[in-house]
Image (cartoon, rainbow over all chains, first blue to last red; front, side, top):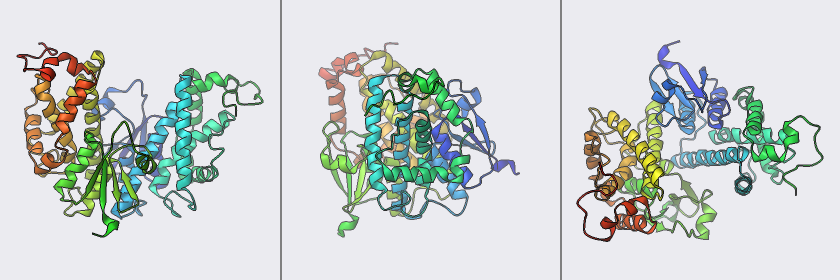
Length: 240
Length: 239
């Protein structure tokens, strides 16, 4: 293979933004190599090439470095036909805004999952529920976010539902319990082949391990779930 | 004018991301209305249409709402040919990464300006200088960031240099003093007509007012600048 076109994705195993890129790459059958790095111990070569020190980063050939998940996703989409992105400038702009919106939600969800402070935890949960409500409205009479066709926006939301599914199986607290459309939508996009293969096999394990070892509110309120005791009768934290 | 195509930009007066959009709208001669809102008192109609409660947002016609400065800028560029953005997928991706890079620098500059804690101020200043060093390298043998032609990336950096120009007399120690190329570049892009008209006339006044009223490190280290005759040297960055 011409070395100029080799794609190397630099990622972090539980990084949801890396997961977005992996999902598109799987969906579009792009051949690539993944280099995993530790976020708390970034190698020198990575710091040198990544302007803001973030993952994911896509190295094309030996020298070209692309960063930012939304940007990498659009690039992959453009070099692999047929394109998922529309041609209409307005629709493109709306989709790009939705990429960033999904980033905010994902950022807040991760902040919620790894929160060590109870007050912050409660506030983030409220913020998330507020936004789930908003997305629920957007999905009215629609199969996918933009209508009846899968778009890049839907792939952008995959990590959100992968993380929520992980939480569901860990704790008996279904954050989506009041949101029927979101549940159906989430099940559908996480059933896509690219969703299943667009992450490391140990993602759930590493997330649960992180929740436990970082002494998070989630862990402190439900130690039974993390310590393999028999399942308790109710959710210790989210009493309704 | 067909109401479906009316462009209304919703902005805060001192928001640098709004400034980016204003800059390109002036550059491309787009007709639009601006609605200014208060950052700390957002109206209900705004909260209803902006899911993340951020500015800038561009309302097209009566219903379509765009948000994210980069998305709005690309949209404006696309509907007003000739486009500044390249057609090449890799170049587009590299340019978009620079939009985000400029956002990070702008974010840090604002954090620096409105910082109330000395330690944090020093740390942010160091981070910014590191990034400026990076940019100085990018500009080697180049008039603009992407070469000899003005691009959307350059318009993204306008707020950075508007802010640095505003800071120059306050800090008295020019952050750009070791970066000749950046100084020339900054002068060149802030002299563009769109850079001059792409912000509110009271931008500098409002920024300086905010620096003073929020009891920032900047204010505390140079009270003379804000309250009276210019001092002969920088109180804070004594070398």
